[in-house]
Amino acid sequence: MQTTAAIDADYEAGIKLYDEGAPLPEVLAHFERIHLQAPTDVRIAVSLSWLHILLGNKAKALAYCRQARSTAQGRFNQVLAYLEFHEKGVRERFEEAVDEAGHEGIHDAVANLQDAIKRKGGTFPAAEKMLGWLRDVHPEHD
Image 1 (cartoon, one colour):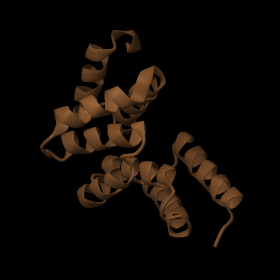
Image 2 (tube, rainbow, N blue to C red):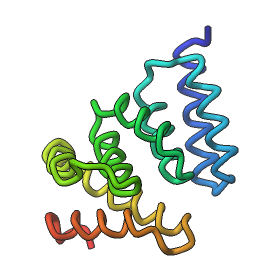
Image 3 (tube, rainbow, N blue to C red):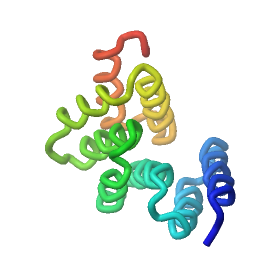
């Protein structure tokens, strides 16, 4: 079993891979390896939920979203997954995420959605819709 410091370093390396624009399947494989070592680490669940949403893997995206619901980003990921995969309860989940997130969490969600749209070639209807909702609720995030 890896130490907490090693898992933290692996997590940061995965974030760096993603930020540098590595192919999503490569980033996903990295986080799946870490998840095997730290299956209860919510940061890893948030990352896995995000990657599975972007890759269109409904079952895995929804499963990791449930695991990551204890964080604001996990809740926003769940909203995006519900939109993307046409699940019910989107609006309620959105309101929960906004209530929990605060200003900084909403700012991060906006940045993440903008990144998702960019990574999807400039068109990602679910992310665009959610981004519009966030801007309606918090217009300062334009």
